[in-house]
Amino acid sequence: MASCSEGSAATAEEEPTETVTSQKREARLRKFRELHFKRNEARKLNHQEVVEEDKRLKLPSNWEAKKARLEWELAEDDKKKECAARGEDYNRVKLLDITADDAERWERKKKKKNPDTGFAGYAEAQFRQYQRLTKQIRPDMENYEKQKEESGEDFHPTSNSLIYGTHVPTKDGIDRMVEDVEKQIEKRSKYSRRRAYNDDADIDYINERNAKFNKKAERFYGKYTAEIKQNLERGTAV
Image (cartoon, rainbow, N blue to C red):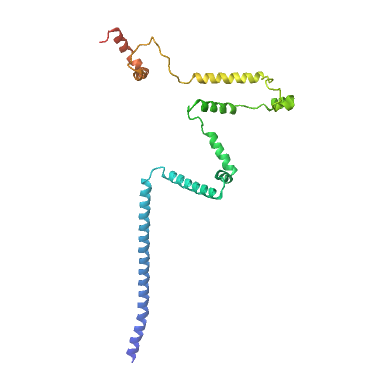
């Protein structure tokens, strides 16, 4: 009986030990499966990032700007359609969304840009000159108030006013006008124009294109070939 009780006690001690061991093994297997799953997820995400980066590298350099521009144009078209459906003016609705800071910033950008894109026509050139000249005007408020007092109601003439043609410019105003005209003349004198034809010049070309090439070659290499040219003209070249 004693031996049986001792055997049953040993068996009872072994069972908890095996249970603890199996639990530890299950925990290690669970941890291993979790690590294996995370590794596969990381590998999948890494592969996706590599594919996306390869796509981005194959796109044009200005793709992001083009994409943003297209998205903005689509949004603008949608807003225009919504305004048209409500019977509203899109330009007026758009202005309502612009803040004073944005408007001021856009105005500063416009001022920084050079509106002169080259000669497009006499009307455009004259208009640009008019804008340039008017920006240079500095109003004399003291003289303005003085003339306003002297003219009275005729300062803002009507069809019945007789003040037209009676204004006499000041000497300073005439001097400013003369100075500005002289500056315009000096500026126009610097413009590149077609050179006048010289009848006494040597004819060493066969057409106008060849004449331009010869002038360019003379400008760069004339001092090195002057002696050779003189010997050829005298007939003493070796």
